[in-house]
Length: 514
Image (tube, rainbow, N blue to C red; front, side):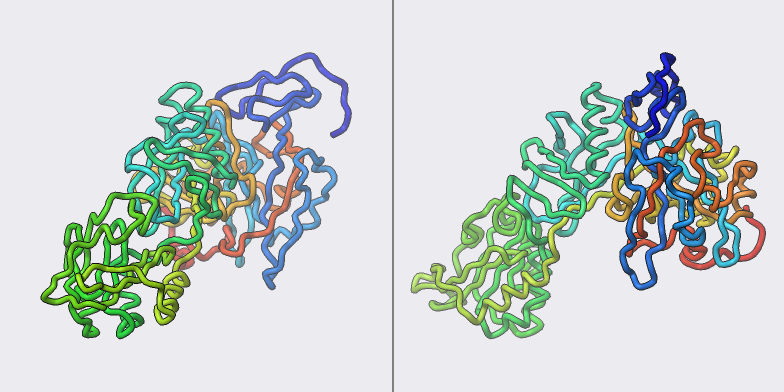
């Protein structure tokens, strides 16, 4: 940064509702804007997405120093047709009546396109966290806490995973000041890919990080279950045929019993006289064999024999063999019935080890997934058009694509523009915050130029992509951008301004726009 004379006058930043007065040489409460010799400067670099090389090779990022001057870059490194200006570091539309910081025109396959770039201030936002484990982490609806403050709750478990719903307007603004601050900090850390410590009331201690294995009560999870107990029986029935007399796959949700299960019946499996303590659903499928926990198959069991009743002496025979295994293959045991038809644990026979390894092989690595979820249905839309409802309609008609930092989003049906995005598919440090408290998230709207004009877009503020790449000041901003960085496109992401993908992957049909 060039040394300049200090000024005594503070300047006011209008980038969020806090409206900080900032002294020369200091930054605002968010650490994103600063006063440099009486000028409001943006400290985070504007992030430009660069098309990955055709061979899929890595491209070297440049200008990654947040404080590096934009004057050091003449804009010649990136060809415009290979660039996409993301909203990361672009600035905001607050107080919303002004056009978006960047409204960029480009040409894709000979068609004029427009991308409207804004950092949204989201009080109505949160994250959905998927934790791949069959272990019980806490009762449904119980509070999830960070730093002792409630930041969300345990929600309905899904197939092979536990789920958390964190954030939301009630935790951000509806509780005490500390609750709001901690909730915002937790969302920011999770969305930026940082490891985050959480505790669940009457449940587990967790370390959650997007794209990494969860840590539950200090133990790293290795794999998610291959399926429920019934599914496991169905998948591997033929591999156990003639190797063992009975197989029980222990699972907190649905425990599977081979001799009773339809999969066993199809291949001619003989009855064994086994009895399971649980609520029988359909043949070979049992609910509630034990309480939820961190033991076998997500139950509280350390001894799987506790789910067995007495074998039927009219059917069972001494020497009859029994394999009990969990849905991840982490726990397994082999038994044979004695003269009193009591199961006695034996060494695992070599013939059964391959089938247990096959269960392990079919388990995917346990990961934490973090989806940012926010509503862009409010005044943010005024930065795109003077008639905001037209933007909503354009998104729902698939005429406008919504991206977050260039990453694809899922738009919920129904009213408003409610989106979800996988944070691991976004550039690093894509999220910021303001101490209102609220999360700052990048959002881009891309459409064909005639559609943008038809929805009442701010056509007088459209600038060419070449100028957006070179410029140091956003045309609708009162602040100066202090730097830019280029990052390579994620391998899994479609190019955000590609013309395909509209209307379920088809090019937009010819004809007037609504």
